[in-house]
Picture (tube, one colour):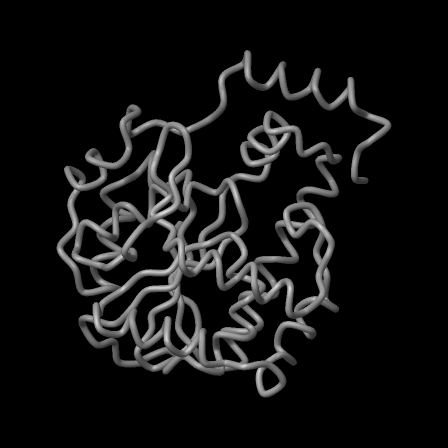
Length: 254
């Protein structure tokens, strides 16, 4: 299911920038890569993994990490949801030198439309919202099946109980929706699993929301695995995740 949230009847303008708000391991690189096919700028350089491009603007990542430092954050944003950190980052505006952030935003605006994606952005958007012209932005909330995301996280040695992981994901989603509702911003909710299993319907919703002309062929250029089937982990990966969790049970986040 793809859902357009808040602001019924709001007018959308073509060429507006796109901001994806999501946690990690939700397929956001696939979605961002797909949207970039419509001409959205991803930055002078993007963060590369060993086997794929994240389509994350490296300068955005660096500035988000700088915001963490400015807030004095020493925790692990990938495993803990901290309401205090949300408040601390929001409170940075007006207290720190905003010029590096404004210069970066000015640079992005010279390449409109641009797209931002970084798993830290659901936190740092509480600072960026003070610099952004929100009317010039479209927002996408991206989620993924909880079990599949838990398997991916566990295979990457993020050891936590399933209930803890699910609660973390739910709270991120809730904080994003709350922020967008507070500022009366419309958003498109996309589920990664449905993008892969039912690409035509999801891409159609994206095109209507962003006023683009993306196609399944555009998705195939980014996603090299089979489409039209649920992107579920294999039985082997599931068993591996369970074994990793059990082996490291004493270290889990519960």
